[in-house]
Image (cartoon, rainbow, N blue to C red; front, side, top):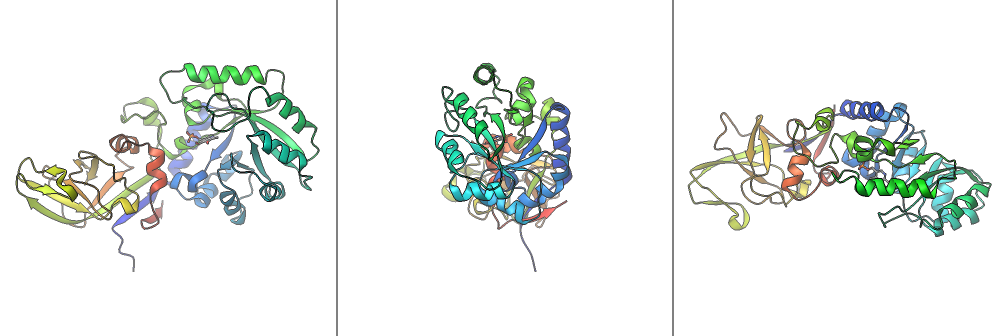
Length: 362
Ligand SMILES: Cc1ncc(COP(=O)(O)O)c(C=O)c1O
């Protein structure tokens, strides 16, 4: 018998709808859907199966993620984003139609020396300013030329990653695009630059392949908490985290709630305790006042988030009873808004929900 107090509802058709938005914005580009980290917490295989027919490929961050997709019958092209590339990984990728990102000189050298029996597709990543992964601008063209001559490299896509595309300040992105175009000006290879923020805010970054992640999952990479924002309004929430009220109590004015008494009742108050906590992936950093939806009404967190429980102030709410459901983020409450209160981003909220929470797909 499952009697869980917390539930994660994943809306697969909302993911498909967000994918349509990607395609309408970047109509000339192929879509490499970024489904790393268990499809941003939405379930890798289920998400992949739902959108596989409508995309050009799927990008993941770890070999295990690519293997999981292949073992579960996903046949579309896969891309292994920057990882520690070794001979075994490279051979597995070549045999299983998984493109690899070459992001260091060592990666390129490994590919050139590999004598692969099956061809491999290589995405050559240029560092245009993120200084995390990517080959240096001075060596990029020479590395491209050597890959081009390699008989087991089937095709090469040139790529880079944008560090600031969601920022209101467009100058860093303009500079990255300019550097990319300058370095590869004499190379005619397919290109890939745009993440979600590039797709939404920088049309000139779209190129041959776009790589959307977070926007497929309904969050605006520009962290806005307002539904009135036109882009946020077009994105459909794909993940709703909810929990049941397991207790309701009255507290007197001046009484504190939760560990270390960080919330003190300013007036006689009604407190609802929810069956979810940081061990379920709800951030412990959520401050007093972080919104929660109880029966459709916004109420503030009152007291520190603990391992299994959260307390909210329902003094202003009518008709709330034990067993009622509260929404922590998702339908009716933007993950971005919650993230701002927790000093984090929607990406981290989505990928942090733990296995203790029951999953349901609609
Ligand atoms: C190389 C690369 N491309 C694309 C993405 C997708 O980014 P976003 O989720 O912001 O769309 C990521 C994610 O971090 C990435 O690492």
